[in-house]
Length: 162
Image (tube, rainbow, N blue to C red; front, side, top):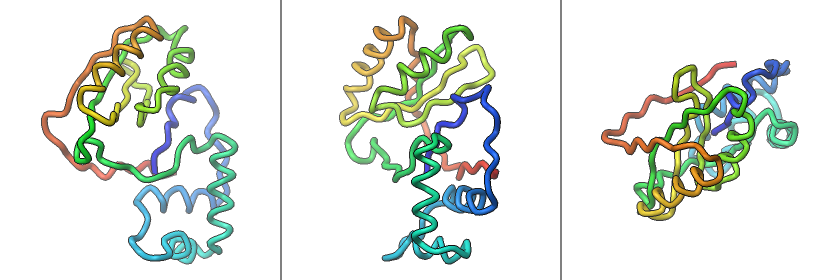
């Protein structure tokens, strides 16, 4: 599961129901590799598969979750993958966030409390497309993109309990 939550930095934290909280916390650790992954997770939580799917659809529709789906390793599939950062003035942050998030190649986009305050992952169909995508983002936003390609991969099992 992936969600771009930090773009709503100044928004209030949603008031999750216990079921929504259980669903989000459980799905952050992945789906079981079974023939009925949603049904199996629903049973773990104590709801029906239809309830689980209904909550997911509602959380996506109301913008609490901006994305739910599989994460593919673009580099392992012959594509390009890189971490990028931008330095965006606070007064322009929302506009640039919307522009950057329009690119299909942007997998995550997070606000950081750092001079480089916008960080995102680019995943492209070819390694060469990374430079083209960065150039298009720079042209659209008017701000430089700092490309930081991976030197070594770590798996941190990122999880944000709510």
